[in-house]
Image: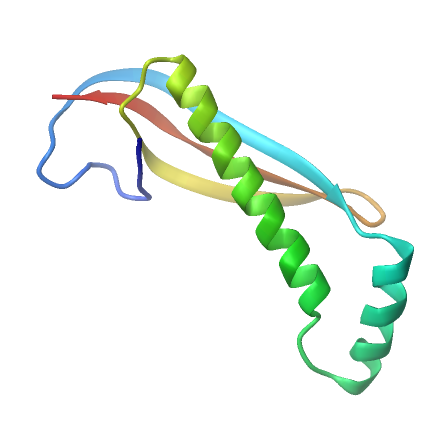
Length: 104
């Protein structure tokens, strides 16, 4: 499965558009992480635990989008985008979506 943020796949022809493929996940921070990241926030620097949490969430959303596209019979997903939103205090949704296509 090819996944790209561009509208086309280099050297390949799109022969059929199958629809929107999407995947999402909602991840929540935890109390232990909040304490350690709160201390780091006072002194400055990257909030690595939160960066790792969001990286995990992005990867999970992309994996779910890919699975959705495979169920449609797609060879690729083009024009992929990622969005985030706050669902609750301490919980964020990450959504990946794009156009599922068949290639020649």
